[in-house]
Image 1: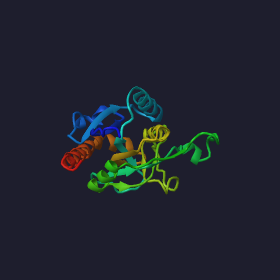
Image 2 (image 1 turned 30 degrees about the vertical axis):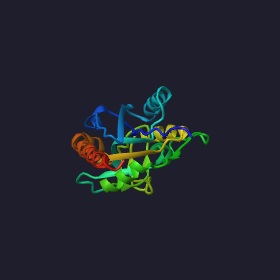
Image 3 (image 1 turned 90 degrees about the vertical axis):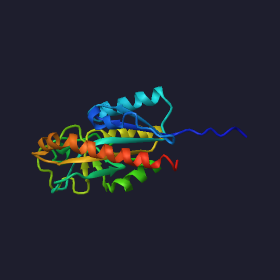
Image 4 (image 1 turned 135 degrees about the horizontal axis):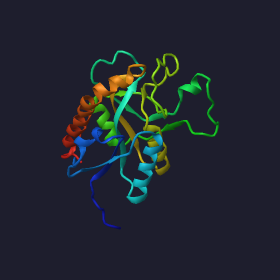
Length: 214
């Protein structure tokens, strides 16, 4: 029988921009190794960055996205976090009948949630929901168009497709920065730095709390 090699659980954290993960740089414990990468804005950039990383390195035990998202629900007036393992790519123009999506083009991805992500979601009391990942920011009131979807983000559909292809658990964690609609971009700019820091600090506290049990 071969020797059992003990090693830390390796968690790859993807974010669209550096500010969404800068507090996680260097975060590691004897039981958990955090590896952050900036994957860029948009599904294509994110998918390419993750693919290139996985081609050059051993697959991690889990992949987390840590970033921001808008919410299709109104009344967002304080920091909340969201968690998602179900991702769509539904474009507003298609929903309104102004354009057509090729039938063979993927539009849905559901990913596996790893044990670290499951524990983190409970620790953060994160709101659970599915996520729409269009290639552009929705700037009109989407009422009635995405009733069954909770969040809007621009990277996680691409990341989810790659994670499924490589058979690695993937979960997205969001700082919910704005309600989707005409004022969404302004609200994002006003909130993303503060809310992102709150999300990151929650992750730091959770990872630190695990070092004696892993």
